[in-house]
Length: 233
Image (cartoon, rainbow, N blue to C red; front, side, top):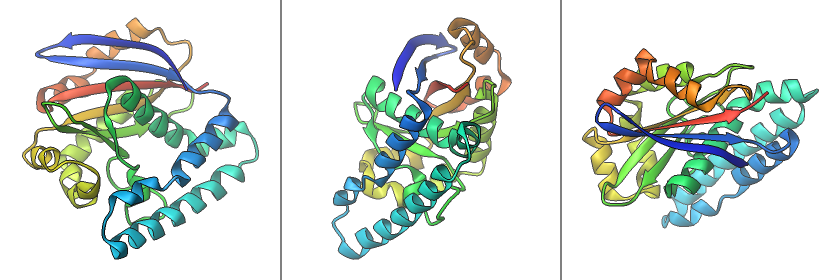
């Protein structure tokens, strides 16, 4: 993963972060993603042996299913179709951790109940500074399109449905009590992760995002916003 660009810009009374990343070779990226998903070192944060076994059971089933799905793809086009959202999700989360010094939290795909397909936010990160807030992340992939609208719409829907509140019990083992308390009170940030066309100009893209009605509404109801574009041809 290469950080292509990073901007901070003011919008209303908030400072918005925009990060643009480009993946390495697609097959290499898929291998890296599967490797990172299979790394269950985060289980060491769970002190209860029965609870740890439960998380391990669910995570292992999910990794096996994803590996089967990705490696059985006939060509790169099919691989991208199957794995596009995971590429956007994992690379965006990694970029936020690297560039914004957030704490890592396992993908919700790994710690949720379903083997494949998460019913809420795709990922969370934690800004563990004076603010102590969690960022709810949603990734969207659309073939040869800038998918920020799809991501923003889904985030709006999930906030309305209070998906972030329903995830509190899953996040408990991986974040601070203060961040959980803030999230429960409606103090949190969001990370909109989306595929971008390689040809899209950063500044033009930012200007279009700033005019997006879903973005404007979102900025007004959360404490912080991070936008991450992932180049996928």
